[in-house]
Image (tube, rainbow over all chains, first blue to last red; front, side):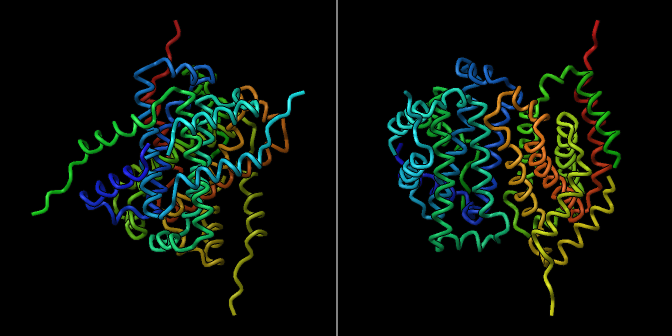
Length: 107
Length: 107
Length: 107
Length: 107
């Protein structure tokens, strides 16, 4: 995934639609949380097993992958607006998580 | 950003902690929505201007970028669990969005 | 608002539709969070002033009040399923909040 | 539950802390969604059965009932700020839901 290219595409997309004034970090966080709920909605009444079986239901999976893409697009747009290096932040968080949750030592 | 490498790192991370049984799509969607709210929390009482000024507050921005990374990590983990190609889904969504929201024609 | 009556109405509503098996606390929390996002969606692109002006837009307010009702209905249903006394919990929280956030003393 | 009394208590609470300027509908929706996620967090890794067993875990249930109260308090506060009659909206939604989802006829 080319984050820099995606940032530029989304920047141009907002500019061409005169959406820049709407894209405050506050608004983007709200909009992203709405997309997140649209993803959650697919799973709300499913059992654990049913939620795993979604993997084998192409239509359902297509719809779910669109919600996932919506979240990613807002995340990348917010990173651009705030000047956050998402790649670096992710690598840093992986290190922090590894320190916070040590692996289980099996005997 | 190397999505494939990230997928493998998160897969190994879950395996080493015996977390695979928790990582149903349903649970991952819930956990991701909780991380999302932690991002929203940073902006809830800010004005639009204050939310943009976060860009120039390094400590605040650091905390926010960690929440953004948490969302991305769950998104990538869910993509792996469901077998979703996040890169392809994103490119597809960009095309759909361009069709849904035509650019403004300025006179 | 008669909470007990509402609890009984929702209990009967779920029973008549054979929804009881879906109404685990986990699922109700997810469903409530989805309704919450539908409320948030109304405000995501509004300025602070525009969000206040909603008060004077009857159609908009009608739609918003329906989302608010949805949240309340799930909250009451969850209280029933978990055996939580929502009225008592609310009174208790008011006291806790008053201790946590002392009022401003004006000179 | 006395909604009118609760509205007055929360109105006074906000006034005494000079919080009225923060309590735009937009901000209250965001803050309520954050409280919602704190409720969801209690259930994110639980199985359906474990989420039901919470009923018999007093400490857990206490914490959960506090999150539920937080949601209700923001809901009532938002109703006041927007001039929404929450009781009437709820009764109206019950009727709409009954029309939308007819009960199952058992043979």
